[in-house]
Image (cartoon, rainbow, N blue to C red; front, side, top):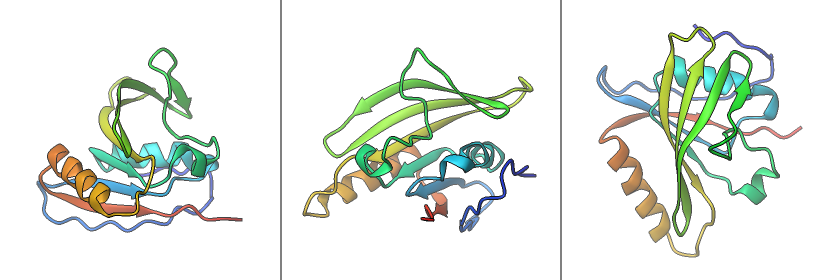
Amino acid sequence: MLELVHQAPILFFFQPVTDNMAPLILTQAPLPVTYSDFWTMVVEQQVEVVVCLLSDIELGGHVYWPVDKTRDLTLGKMRLSLQTCNVRQHWVERIISVNMADGKTSRVVVHLQFTSWPGRCVCLFHLLNRVLACKNTFAIIGFRRSKK
């Protein structure tokens, strides 16, 4: 069960397609106060792919993943480590490991982040193909970043 650290709203939609399909998170980005809740949900829902629809500029410096291989990101009871980072023309592919403090629970997640939205939808098509290459089928969990 998801143990919320903060009572800030996280809006999401979860639709399990079948028992053998791994969920995907499609997000603008969680609010900084919900980063720990977000990654806890990733672990508990056994998410394999997270797609961030915002560039670093649009995030305004509020990134919810580790940005350097040599520095882990600690959030609540978990530690996130950047394993690989591959910059593409319109997105960045990251492999992130999430380790819970209990030492028993861990997860490896593919994190895809849009860095630009070109005038044509070809970029979206290529990114969707990349998502499908990560997992042939998936359910969708959507998060919206609320503004205060």
